[in-house]
Amino acid sequence: MMTSIPQNEFKQRILAVQDKMAHSGFDLLLAYGNEAEPQFVRYFSDYWPSFETAGVLIPVQGDPLLLIGPESLTYAADRSRVADIRLLKAFRESSEPEYPGKKLDTFQSVFHEALAGKKPGKLGVAGLSLMTIGVYTALQQALSDFGCIPIEKADDLVMALRMIKSENELKCMRAAAQITHQTFDYVLNQIKPGMTETQVVGLALGKMHELGAERESYPLWVLTGSGTNQAISRPRHKVIHPGDLTFLQIGARVAGYASSIGRPVVFGKATDAQRKLIEAGYAAQKSVINHLKAGVPAAEVAIRHVQTVEKLGYGDWLLYGPCHGNGLMEGEAPWIETSSDWVLEENMSFCVDIFLGDNQTQTGLRIEDTVRITKDGVEELTDYPRRLFEL
Image (tube, rainbow, N blue to C red; front, side):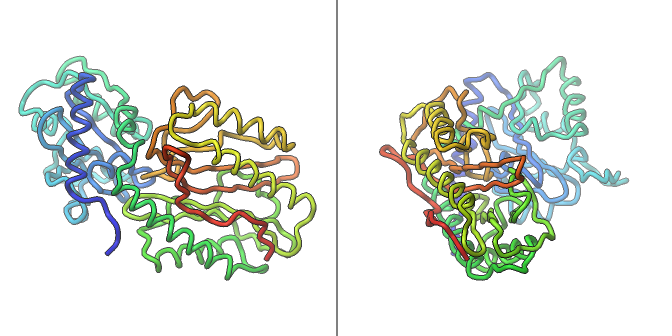
């Protein structure tokens, strides 16, 4: 049976965020998400919208409501851990059908229901930066009917809960990491010159689903030769040639929880420049991992990373800090950066993500693994070999 989050943990999440809402003065919290970034909605309901957007409306006291678009009731009822579901036109798909004759709820009606007829005084939105202008306008109009009530960003309030992973979350993350590890093994055994980047991604997608993944953690990519300096990308129809340095970026998702492995490979004997770059990437990642443990200031990790990469001779190849949060999104808050003003805590989880790219030569690499912070260091969830892969 595949790992999942039990129902009682979803209830605990609602109670925990209601406690934080009470301390922050929020009467209502709307956890908002879409198909690409369902993180806030899924955290409270396990629902992942498709085509439409969605939200979980949480009153400071009482039961939550799952808010979805007009077409997804049968889908949501099959998956949601929140029992009460309401359909809103505001959450319709982007082609904006009108649904004439269909009776739908509104923000005004669900606010009345959630607060038992009381007037809301303060509303927060977790996922505010994801919200479409159509949803924002409908939300703003609904609040104006109750008086001058602002929309406040509440991402940090929810992320304070999400950053520290429970044992059930870690079980899902370990399962995702294991599938990612096995998928990476499979791809390395199958990949060869003559294949295109898109074909290699197809190999990974097929294998991870065969092994039990729910979906990929993010749109996977493989980059070969010129263009490997792209920090974020998608696969091309570009053919892999002998001598190419190619990096593979693969991650599987289990019960919503993401994993990721990034490794460079060389097809044939590595050149001195390729070998030096790969060794520098591994050295930089090792330096970061060796410094991660509970109680360490996050900025200290990032500052040491910059110093390490500069010492290795690749300072100009740096783009961003060495780690970002990992959980319901492969890349979620918090990021470890030189400006970070917080301290690492046990059971935080990160992708240790070393990207080095040179725009002049259009070459680069990414070395990435997922870890959990412990009292004494890290648990390496992906635990993939760090060596020169010459295929």
